[in-house]
Length: 339
Ligand code: FAD
Picture 1 (cartoon, rainbow, N blue to C red):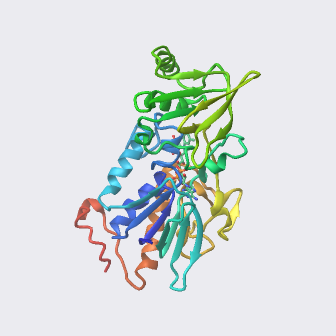
Picture 2: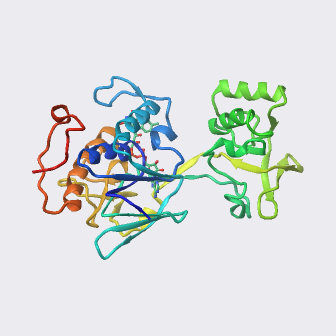
Picture 3: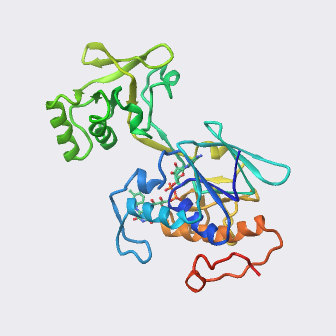
């Protein structure tokens, strides 16, 4: 059981900044994210795009903002459960909550901050009847650790940047890389398309287009895929099949937690502290709604800051606190001992 003060669901910019604000109050945080890396939309959807409305930064790349937020929070030693989706929540007799992920990891905290943005990004899966049987047994929808594929045969399918970039990367890691796409044209960056063509000429990538994987087979682990190219069907032996068809955001299991939901977002009390209808559960960032709500990163930062002040009172009942500036006391001197 992982125990913490504030359990943050969602490691997007809002969740990451919560770590810093909570740290100033001497509160420990643990973050759960369905994605294998932190950063939320910034790292998943537009890491190379500049953002112009972060106060004090005339321009910052979304990927660099994520790096900076991680750096800012690092001193408070947050914990991470990545690549797992928060699935259920159970209130305990002592008022704390236990949140369990789809992989069975349990987390306990007196306060839960949902910073789930547009929801958990679910991989778009190919329509193959028995594919679920091979998930985590040779079928992967994310690449968490490329070393897993060292010396193995890999079939990747998809036509976007992820499929192209990982095919290029794995060409030097896997023993055999086959990229299958249902069109001859790819949607990804031109540069990556050219690189894949070069690697094909060098014999480092097998390119099969226009074609699609229509079947998977194997005993307990995947051993091969069936490919349809025009009227022809054939098999390719492989150790891994990695469909990279993109991700679709869904509010997902959080929608069943008894929270008040309006238009796919969680209603909160914005006059006070962004608490939901369940005391002890807050919703901050893109995932919440209230009159005048704006889905912007800086609004998530503001909401996280006020939420932490309120969470402090739940975690330290009866203790008073006085707001100090980090510039006056420094972060080490910011002792959190509220008088
Ligand atoms: P998100 O970034 O969405 O992160 C939420 C995280 O929660 C995700 O990683 C998700 O996997 C995780 N999650 C959700 N449910 C679960 C669950 N059940 N279990 C585990 N994990 C879960 N904003 C600006 O201010 N300026 C801009 O210039 C700007 N440009 C943008 C450009 C694009 C193309 C897009 C798509 C958005 C842009 N935005 C911009 C919006 C900005 O990205 C969002 O406001 C911001 O990402 C919200 O942060 P968040 O942390 O609340 O949520």
